Length: 107
Image (cartoon, rainbow, N blue to C red):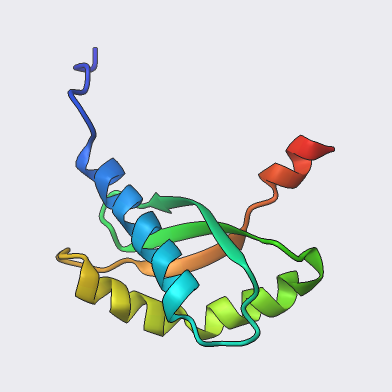
């Protein structure tokens, strides 16, 4: 039987910190004109913090593929900026996935 968790697990705190920092970086630091209005919805981090899957949506659905290319292009920049803002032994490699759960929920 598992012990009940007290408070947040470290992984949850790291996940929320990554989500906050990425949202700010995408909003203020991303100078790529191809990136539209991006909303970071969720981040899933592996237990060893080596990979983070970032779920996002865009305001304009027509710009979805262009925004995906812009995020892939900026992946290294975003990871290095995360390294400056978050003190972790290993900054996770970022994987961007479009969050389709909102679209499924609306239909």
